Structure formats: structure tokens, C-alpha cells
Image (cartoon, rainbow, N blue to C red; front, side, top):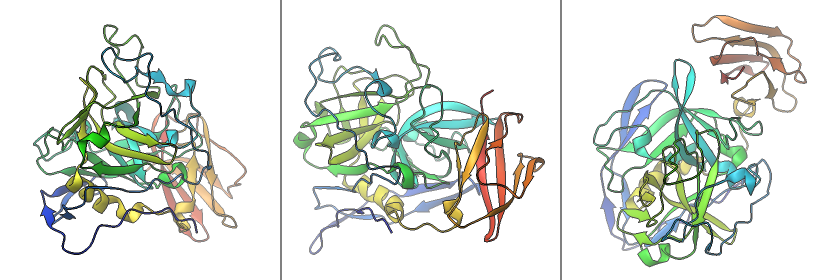
Length: 395
């Protein structure tokens, strides 16, 4: 069993407790709305963070430059302009692989949406405005899809993508620091990619020290502000120093974002040992982020706390499809000693599109003849039925 450290324990004894608004829980699969109430938090704690986890793919951690940059900066700032992440980093290494692109679905088509970061084996943090209107307790869409290190228009074959099963936002949220959303995933993709930390720091001056990184999927090109051409299909990064910290915001004066950057984390990197998100991008001007404070941190930790550990998975979870989404063919990873008897693929209308009896685990399943869209894969095993949702895209 492989365990990842969970989080720094709350201080005990003589502490005061703050109670804030509730968190709305949208169950996208069942179409229901619930809430988490009576979230209590020790207001005497000045800083805390969850611990990051490298994940099961490999133990390679990217060595980031933690010196304050002096070139290719936004004028009047100490923050660099965007550069293509694959030009400098191996996207399969940690924590690059915790960067995700968020899509919504429209008639079985994936549509560009926002950026986000994996913060547990089954949770992603992004901006609330990517999925909901401020002050309105409803969502734009009932179908969301998350893909790790999507790049150059391709899904990474080393990692699973996943549909979103639940969305968490603050009730009656606003842009004054509450532009935060937690997405709960159908598949525990963080088991393989790992995840970054989330945290809060009460002392503003401490957030102005050190170097912060951002990883995002810009979708809009503005040649007057940024010479790069963006279309949402590639992971970019920039980094530098934060210079404007208020009660509800973390910003970089004179730095500019574009569409698609929304929801990307502001991640403080410390000597390759800590990777902590202190907020997510809300506004493009001055790269203004909604800041995670003490209570917001407690609320988020309440949501994700049961998913901050890697342990032995049950048989159902050990079956996964890769790559997914799939353009031409896919394979099935299955537990050692387990056997798939029959394999059936259904479309959204429940019609059988593909059937293979006595499936050979060494064989790839070619679905290039199927139309693009969402399908359901049923695997009959000696331990019961396993169902996985797959996305067909491409040519």
C-alpha cells in the first residue's frame, strides 16, 4: 500500500471557530443539488496546506527555476510572458502532469472551457465562473470533462481523462475571493498523475516572497498584449513574483491573461519540495486570483479529505482505458490475474456499436470507424461487470 501524507493537523485546544456560508454540491450524474453546511474552521491558525503527492506514474519531479526572472517579463512586473510548457519541461513529469484542461460537452463534442489543477486523486480546482454565474446557484452545463496535460491538440496517452461527477461552489458566490470551484471526477486520475497542494497563508508579505508558477490553456489571441497565437490546444506556463496581495486576491501588477487561463492555479514552488496553490485566476488584468483563505481552505479540505491518500484500489478501479479520449484504438489495463470475458461498446442510445467475445488483453480495440462522441464500455469479468465511459474524437 502506498500512502501520501494527508495534511497538517489543525491546532487543538482553546481555539476559536469561524463558520461561513454553505457549499453547494451539484451531482451531474443524478441531476440533484445538495449542500454542505456548518463548515467550521479554527480561525487562530495562520497558515496550513495539504501535502502534494507525486503519484504512481513515476517519481520524476521537475526542477523549477526558483530565482526571480529578469528577462521576457511583462513590462513593469517580475512575471514572465507565457511560453510553451513542452519547450522547457517534460510534460509527463510531476507536477506538470497535474495541469488539466477543462472541456464542456455539446452534442457529444468537446468544447474548450478553462484550466485547472489536480489537488487529490479525484478532485480538480478551477474557477467558479468557468461553470456558473456569480450570485446564481446553478451551472452553465451538466457535462464536464477533464484531461491531464492535453497538449498540441492531443490527449496524453499516459494518463486517463475523466468526466466530472460533482461540482462544488460556494452558495451565492461572488468575485470577491469566492471564485473557486472543486470538480469531483468519475475516475481517480490523480492516483497516477499525483496532485499539488492547496494552502492558505494569513501573512500577506510571505506571499510576496519566492516564485510562483502558472500552467494554463489560453484560447484567445491578442497581438496587442501577447505575441503568441493561442487556440486552447496547448499547455503554456509563466512564472515570477507576486506583488499585490489583498484580503481576497493575489495579483501580479501589469501582467495580463487571456481567455482559457481562467481557473489556473497560482502555485508557489519551494526548492522542488513544495507545490502549493494559493488561489485560481479570476481576472485577466493584473493576473488577479481568488485567494484561498483560512475558511475557504477548510471548506475545500472538507470536500477532498477522503481522496488525499493512495492505497490499494478495488478490482473495479484497477481497470482503466488508455488512451481516453481515443482517436483510433485503445487498450485496457486490467488487474494482474483478472480476465475480461466479453467486451461491448454502447452509444448514448444504448445501441451496441462493438462486440468482442473472449477479449485478449494484448489486443488493441480499433474504433476508428465509430463517429465522434461519447460511448459506454462494458466489460464482463469473472468478478462482475465493469463500466467505463470513453470519448471518441479525431479522424
